[in-house]
Amino acid sequence: MNKYSRRTVLAGAVSSLTFGAACSNGLGSRGPGTIDARVAQSLSFLYSSYPATRDLRDKAAGQLVMPLVTEAGFGIGGSYGRGALQVNGTTIDYYSATQASVGLQIGAQQYAHVLFFMTNDALYNFRNSPGWAAGADVQYAVNDQAGNLTADTTTSLSPVIAVVFGQAGLIAGATVKGTKYNRIIP
Image 1 (cartoon, rainbow, N blue to C red):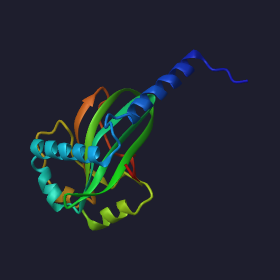
Image 2: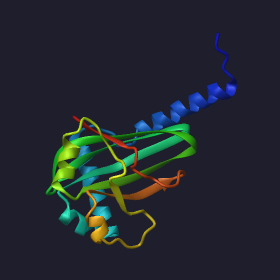
Image 3: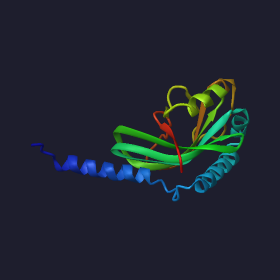
Image 4: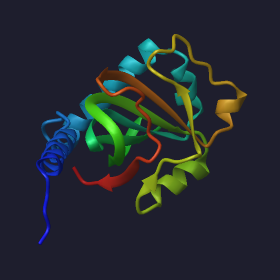
């Protein structure tokens, strides 16, 4: 017979609730129209707030826009969001982003991010993987506190460049490393 302390049961219940909150990220309708509208708003905000990201857009083979990712945790945490993959400004697929984590964490936050695929190979590998996970090949170009951004030769040589922006909440340091992306049918 297993004995569970009140602390273990409470931690499990709170973790379940926070992960559930992360999965309900406020996009409302699962329809492509809603996702496309959020993507357009996010890109408009990104390009007006960080004008140098237009240079990344112009050089990229494609971009994955995740307009709203919700992350929550209490010991065990997770994040979830939905977005669109665009090539030449046209949506060609929809994706979900999920991440799970265990460790010293408590709180919740929301943020947006864009992955710029700087080579056709990087875009091809992303589109043809059964579930692509962001790892060491992702270069960060800016965080939300930076006042300027340059697409210098170092970042423009990276196959994938991530821009995380619009952070709000109580967990510091949004990152896409360890995030798994899967194609969805909204």
